[in-house]
Every structure is written in C-alpha cells, then in structure tokens.
Amino acid sequence: MSSPVIVGSILIGADELVAELVRSRIPQMRDKSFGPCTALGVIRRGVLVGGVVFNRYSGFDVSLTAAFDAPGWALPGTVRAILAYPFIDLGCKRVSARTGKKNRKARKLLEDLGFVLEGVCRRGYDGFEDAMMYGLLKEDCRWLKGRKNGRRRTNTHAAA
Image (cartoon, rainbow, N blue to C red):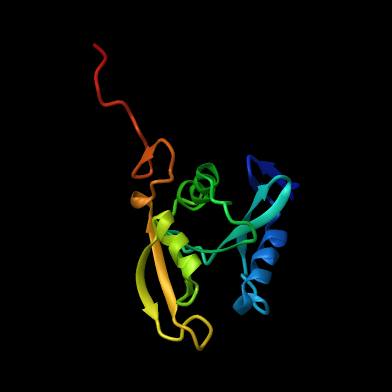
C-alpha cells in the first residue's frame, strides 16, 4: 500500500482518515460505514478541511458524499480534480448524491456544481427527513478541464 500524497490541494491515499472526517461531520453517518470507498481530502494551508467519499460504484455510477469545515474550499481546480476521479479515472457516466431536504447549503452547492435534482425519497434521509436525490452526468460536467462531453477538445479548424 502506498503512502498518502498531496497533489495540488487534494490528499490522495488516506481513504480511512478522510472517510472518518466526512462521517464525523454528518450526524446520520456517525454510526455507519461507507463500506469499500475511495476518499479524496481537500487541503487548505496545510490543514485537512474536508473531503469527498466515493462509494457504491456500479461501473457506470458512483455515489458521492462530502463534508467540509471551511467555506471557500471549492476552488475550480479542486472541483475539477474531485470530479475527474469518477468521470475520468473510473469511467463513470454519472455521479449520484443525496442530502437532506433541510440542508439548503448542500443542496445549493450541488446545484452550483451542476448536479440536477432528480427526485425526492420521502423520509429517505434518516427515517424522518426527506432525501433529495441529485445526479450529474459526465456530458453535463463543465468541470472537466479541456474536455467536452468527457473527451479531449480538438481544434476543428484546418491550418491555413
């Protein structure tokens, strides 16, 4: 097993540490496990400020769960790196996320990132609160730098 590394602002290879941080910030997750997962941490000024856990990988879809202590973590390069993992590295066609109906900050963030509200599961978040189900398709992900529809952009104009 390789040692954790920081690439830009992303901590890679510390899945258990990052998953535990995310789990501890979400009350409904504190006594649960993510199961097999990959977790990417976000580092700001040398401090782990949050992370994203990817689990329930099906080959074409993966679930995303995130928690952050610091506002302003979502710099464009950080978001690109986080979303490149499921779409480029795993080859997923979509990323799924769910949050509680009352968590307006998370819902706004998901929508700002390009996720689309796809449905509501009544009392599906914790047995009491409705779960808001979001999805982001690869072809709709504007964060894949230099790519259109998940493929590298090419110059379509012939040289003169």
